[in-house]
Length: 369
Image (cartoon, rainbow, N blue to C red; front, side, top):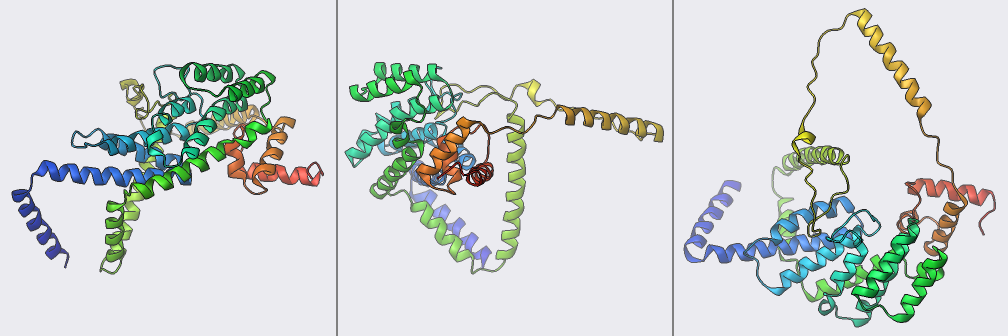
């Protein structure tokens, strides 16, 4: 059955090539691919899957630069993706998307958002996201203990955007008093920013459907499940996926020694991480060791291991400030919402499991209501 399908497809392709302008076909197919990636990015953003979002964004960027794409709609979708990229990196203050190194991710997001007003059906949604970007640009800096950066963000907004006077005064007072957990900041939290953007994306996709290729691919997958050889195909796909995951993990480890990557769609500066010196690999010569040499190497290794264990950093202690973060997070999101609480506050590298364990300790000590 499969060869017949392939022959028919090849015949159809030859007929199309002879009767339709191939550049027009290319433009249409490229648009479908861009739409599919756009929907994928919206889904990754909603799920909060940072790595998958970044991988999809790289492909989207490459296709968006195709000369065959024309029309304001594609340009608008590209801007939306650039906006989402900045929000995804909102709490990473060392990432830059602008030539000006003083412009942090959420500040750059606000700059793009001001150009997307026509894409928002509800004016209140546009206004709410604008205010949330203003507030969180300052709040994230305070959470990281960077008061000077918070002040710089306020000045930047005053000089480059319309900042409501009452909002500017309130934020200035909060920064001056270093009130990281002021009720106003908690009411306009980072999680609320994400939720509001998600509602905007839902409304945008309803108004601008971008799922033609998604539906076609879904239909093909459903039909293939009834065909023969599905098990072999799944095994091959699993093998390829495992290989790709290993490759991705290897790339991630190699790039972790570099400074923060600055994205292009993204960002205006891209550091060259493929310099010759970083690509060199060590060559190890292997020969058989004698028993005495092997014993000596083992002894030296044991001593080095003992030294490393002695130098190992003791477990981090929970400070009153971190306990305060945890209590505020539970009060806002509820017990068990550790992932959301981690997004709102800086817990110095702690995980959701660590938050849960600490909360149990606080409850046993009757330090929470």
